[in-house]
Image (cartoon, rainbow, N blue to C red; front, side, top):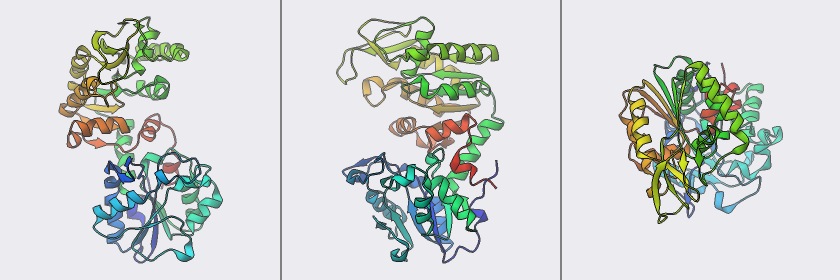
Length: 391
């Protein structure tokens, strides 16, 4: 895959560039609580400014469903970007081409306040297209969405002879994840966690053709254990996916790919800080209890497999890591991946948050800004925000 990038933009000095960023960040009282995604777009923003362009930045934030929600305005992101850039950022709630200021950096309000964004409405994309002379997509986290600012807008720009290219963040994501698709160093180990196996079953099926081992954690492991006859107490199980899970495990066995599920689990009767907890076999969780983290034997077993790997992909926590009593499994896996002599890629918001909580941000080769986008990319799906930018 070859993308048009910033290197293909010529003569942009004095021109206005629409930059689709992913500032879908957590807020606290309107202020940005975690600016990692804003920082990730700084190289693209700085390069365009250094080349003399003026910028119109735009992002979605949350799921307002086509209506204005004061809790989801992007003013906080604009203020944080201004601090990081060290130069003014003008925030606009309702931009129109004729009144757009000539300021070097303008930040629009939440794109999803307009129903045309998620509908991929050409008319809405047309209004956005009037704001700029060129288009740059640096929002990998939204690349799998056929939304107006991701799909219809660059299509309109290209149709009118205006350039549409990938920013440095999007370019880097495609290069790194493309490497995992093409020729990863072996052994290649994938670590997948999260709540529902249905969210990851397609990527598991795709990874079976590429990896040597898949290590499963989080509540999704319960469905795999139940499919094999294990007792999982009150743990979350997707009973309607048991046959699918069995078929996937058969495919893995036929391909010689190891699918590992937890040996033990930290279980409790409820998800709370003070709930009494106990470590039990993951296949024999007593009634009244639910698995909320992988246990120490599982961490040790997974750590041995991780230590032997040369390529590692991690997406999804091993348990309810937000609560300290159930965070040891996720933290243990994070430490094992961080210390592995391997090319390491971490993706998904919860995994990135776990890495940050463990203060291991600098210990990984690539922290992917896309959760669903990275998984769909690794499934081999064509992502609208990427295919439109292919050279």
